[in-house]
Image (cartoon, rainbow, N blue to C red; front, side, top):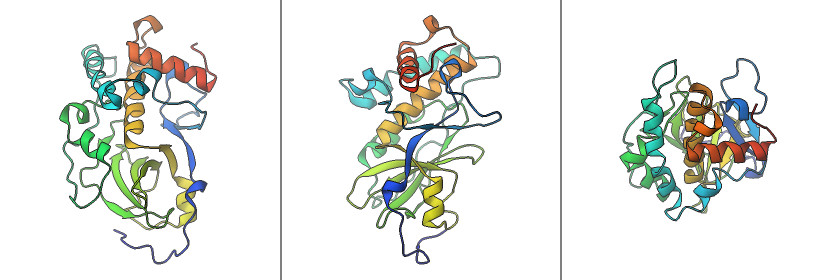
Length: 243
């Protein structure tokens, strides 16, 4: 596991990291998708995810996500033709108490009701060991891998910044397993959210939307209220319409 980046004294400025989102698509609400692609890239369309009601919820994003749990259970009770709904697996995490992880991340991951209720249409799982390495794209920053795609196609990272702030990056590289040059890392990593809460709220609602729209093929009027709000706001921002 790499712990130093001595070979690369130069760091690529953080501004060179592309902002956007990676998605499996939302059926009739999606942008055109490349054949056989598990994930597709959505550029930064200016869509302020995850939805208006989420951003204005009196209980914050955690309160909004807690209200999604019954809709996840409803989706699980009415499975599609290909099997049962799957949740992000992995259970409790094992963090170094001196790791200085974001408070919102620790709060979410310490709450089993939230942590164990996140649906994933690609069977993603939590990385319980939270491996941490120096960032190849920002001097003094660190990457902490917290979420993995089941097939190892993508990995999600807390990007812990020198000023104590953080953001969420996603990429195909397993940066704690091998060393990557700053240039290659900048070409791979995508800034998908400004904070963990913003990321996990969108990840949650978009995966629930996938199960309702794509897997269960619900008509618009049968979508759960939070999914209906999300897909229509997303479609309006991305210029797509239900087909």
